[in-house]
Length: 241
Ligand SMILES: [Ca+2]
Ligand SMILES: [Ca+2]
Image (cartoon, rainbow, N blue to C red; front, side, top):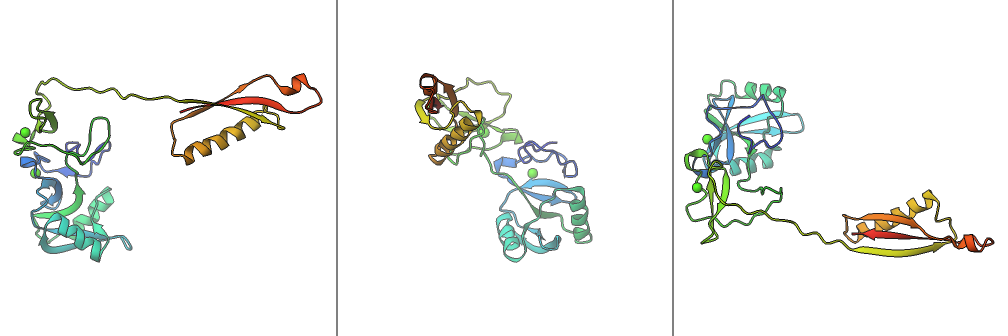
């Protein structure tokens, strides 16, 4: 459906955008209202509309006929009920339609919103921005991508069909190899013992905040091979971080 910036990676056929929506006019429409009680439109979050709260306890919907901004409506719902309502299924939508039926409201806030310009291509997030003073402007409601001015270093939104030079980056990873030699009365050739040792080493690594590592165990000459009376067996484990 349209409006992928609101619904990344999922489909919600029971939610329908009003024709031409979402359009994020002037890059200022980041909150969503039901328009005409059945379809959605992105609207400026500062606009004042009646709003729809829901109560988790008995799954009820409460239409509040006071006009408030989206944030003020959210605060109200969180104070007196549970939150601004979500619409996550056909059943929820039907119940909401029943609640709105006969109210005559044109716009009513629901809980859907988007965090503007929050996502980078590599899926990282950051609150840092460096927009030109008049940007982002979402000219003609089709500027959904960020561009960088080489002379000034400041940013503008632009439409994706424009051709520009582009920056790539390569992540540099550093690998550290730690070798350790273990000697024990236990049979270090035993798969079970090696698994126990690996588990303990993994626990140590994780407790140090290291998550990207591999542990290999390598068999070495057994001490027992040379001295039959003794049971000691040697081995070593290598940890790569
Ligand atoms: Ca709109
Ligand atoms: Ca622009």
